[in-house]
Image (cartoon, rainbow, N blue to C red; front, side):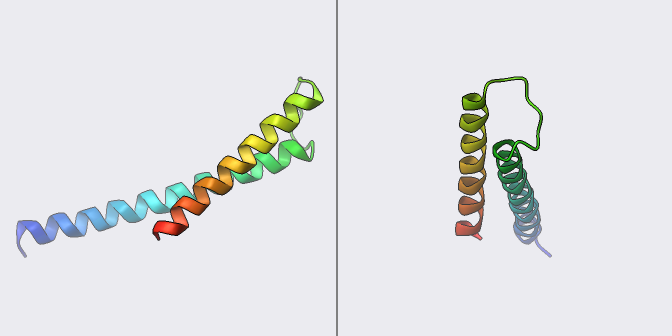
Length: 72
């Protein structure tokens, strides 16, 4: 096995780890945003701040998932 083949194999493995981690983080942001919108997470802020934060996190989670699955 040559050095180039070892590097390619390592890059593929690292790339897979990055994809899975990105998918997990996208799901995390999506769930957290929906939880904030549905008032499952107690926050000491006004309602409009909760909605803005929840919508932003939900959209960011969808964006991350879309970007990961587009390249997958």
